[in-house]
Length: 385
Image (cartoon, rainbow, N blue to C red; front, side, top):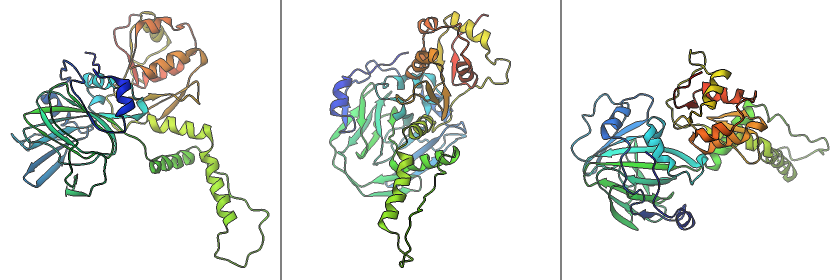
């Protein structure tokens, strides 16, 4: 099934994105849940998938981390099961996320899916990322406040709540409704009846994480070996002093690394394409299904659709042509293949028309073979050689 949003994207981006929360009534018209509560529970039993179960009784909160062997704690009321990165493991949920591709992939985090029994929720809290909350089956009561600083506290070691707030939005979501909440806006939601919610999350890297990651990148690639030099230094009588000209020179040394467009761009490509959650990847390297030139040519000639594995980030930068970044790795792309590589990054599925238009006789297809054998893309159909 293909999902599409039913609201004006240009108006939303101009007036709401990162500015204020809003209710997008029937923002996903005729919405059909991509998975059931039973399927979600099955994912929560897998050790490689992050999940938690939150329950409350009055002011007493409990939170347990998965994987779960059973769901005895999921009571008839006041309980919520939350599973992260469901789009990495469930193709239909991944298709749901595609409806929000008007925001670039490097900003996208994951789809968190929750199932709640009546009165179930995680309590009032503040997130530092943008989220679209889609109402699936059931109904949920939401309260959302304007962006503000509030006191936060931990009612449980695995939960963080905020103090009471005045609601700008106070609404009961029905299937197909979408609630957008930007960073810093307090919110809380409680199921009115058994309910499934899909949270399409968009994170923004903070400066501290970027600088830390860039430092690690420089060390990995041995790009930070330039040292401070002071051949014209004068003798000093102030042994403990760091002179202003010295601190400026040291600052300039550090700024030199940050002002290197090639180094920072390469780092951003690797860093922003890394996946925060594991994915259902099938690696073909060394197996009997490993792809070679003949198999690749046959699949492309027959126009079998090329599909990116759910949850995999594939990015390219304007300032670094002929290079794409997949799951933290850089891949050099020949000039003749650049259009195809960009299409593979922009679209989850490269259709038969696009593949047939590509020069299948090109000998410069190593990059594509490597990506398929690494499990990042696959041909969705039977290929006859």
